[in-house]
View (cartoon, helix red, strand yellow):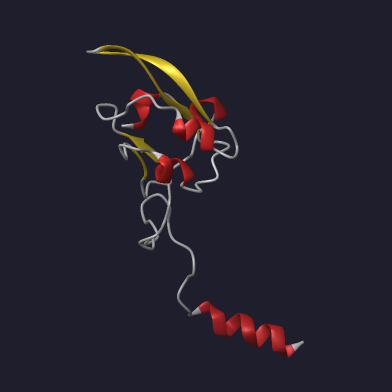
Length: 119
């Protein structure tokens, strides 16, 4: 009976393990993988990212650019594994994983990111 009470009293003065999110954010390691970023100006519409994606979360959609219509990746972040296969296979290296991990939304349809939203 005294053991749990003594442990409780001991931990009252210790440092907290949690952070006050979103005001405080945890420091991420260098190899952390978060949201995808797309450089639309260098995308060559090769569809390699969509073909390699194990969850089939990347689909190619038509986007109107200053040079005409191009097929570019649309990403469903709700199913993304953040495995970085799409980043590895991208020839011009226009699709990269950032360290951004803020995925708080009220509707999961907001996690479908069009190419314009990935910049």
